[in-house]
Length: 65
Image 1 (cartoon, rainbow, N blue to C red):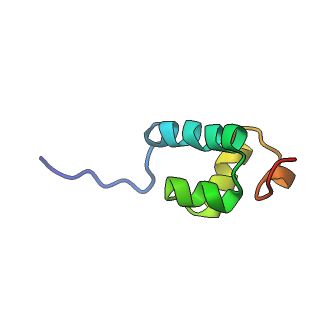
Image 2 (image 1 turned 60 degrees about the vertical axis):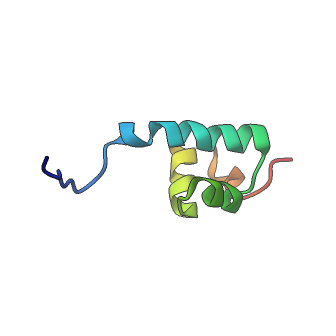
Image 3 (image 1 turned 120 degrees about the vertical axis):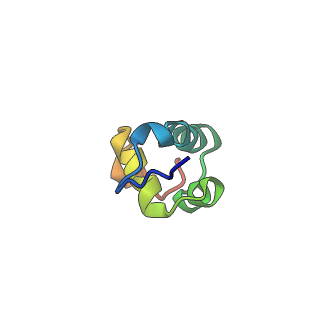
């Protein structure tokens, strides 16, 4: 078995993480750093996923009211 090297991982590989991030943000109301810590991703990645899924930037990184 050879190892396939790709410049970027396919989005499907992160689909479950995307769902987890959205679930954590909406259900558990965690801060951006909390989501990043829980998922093992950096804050910028989490913010980009939230933006791609339609969460406004102004809500990213703050605890929802």
